[in-house]
Each structure stands twice: as structure tokens, then as C-alpha cells.
Length: 89
Image 1 (cartoon, one colour):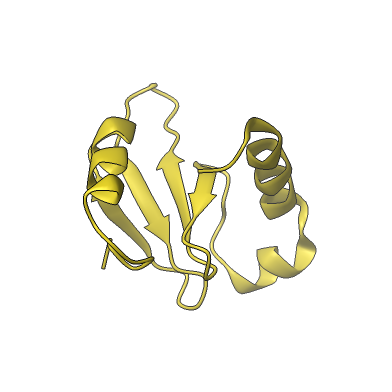
Image 2 (tube, rainbow, N blue to C red; image 1 turned 45 degrees about the horizontal axis):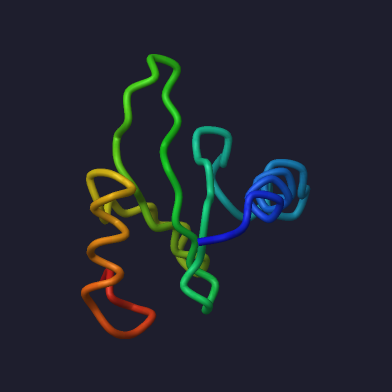
């Protein structure tokens, strides 16, 4: 997980980067909060209704967005209980 300032910086960059806009689907509904150290990013999907849809991983190579945990608590428990950077695969 990232410190608060990095969460702000990374999410701002993802939304403003023109190159990202050409390469990837829209990031507006995603709120990134961490990464695996190899480029994949963890995020919440933000919905207007305020419903929490869980934690997703965004694959930087394929632009896939895959559900990995039902909540931040679930995410942290899964991450703490496994070894390696690719625990979510």
C-alpha cells in the first residue's frame, strides 16, 4: 500500500497522462492505492452510488481489471497470508 501522498499523485497522473489515455481504458472509476512492485496496481472501483465493489488489480501489460478481494480488510488478510508479489493470480 502507498502513503496518502502517493495515492493522490498516482491517481492524478493516471487521469492526466495523455499517453495512458491512448493506451488504456478510462481510469476515472478506479482509485489506486498500491502496487505489486512489478507494475500491476491495486484499486477500488468507485461507483456514483457509493457501493463498495471490492478491490481489483489492474494489469499494466494487458489493461485487465480483475477482482481480488471483497474489501480492504480481505485484501490485507490475503496479502499478509501469502508470499510473493503475484499472490493475487
